[in-house]
Length: 114
Image 1 (cartoon, rainbow, N blue to C red):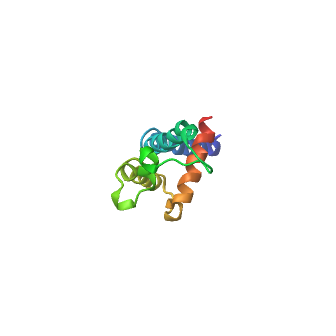
Image 2: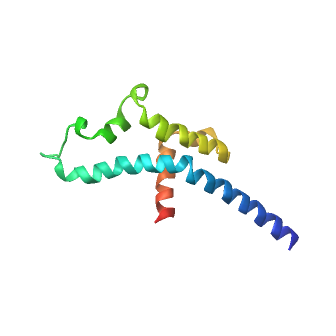
Image 3: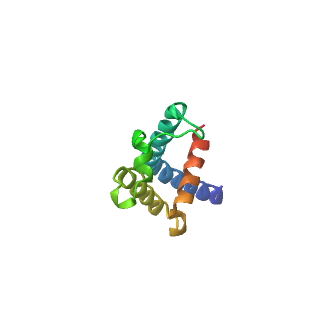
């Protein structure tokens, strides 16, 4: 039982670390993306024309998400910085910090929660 116990203690420690960041930094990231997606889902029925369009100015969350990086505030404070902080704390390497990987991880959290 000694070896099994030791390995399980390591898994428990890793899980606690992960939960700490899920409830902190990654919760901010999840909330930010949820807000952007909710806005889209709510506003989609109000898009007009063929193909359906709507001025970006009427979609503040999406506007913040796609605006130039230097002009963004919410993206940095609610998405980029918290996500990087969590990845650093979890020991995930730099190659996982690009936007495609960020969205893949977001999808993973959606699957885990549902």
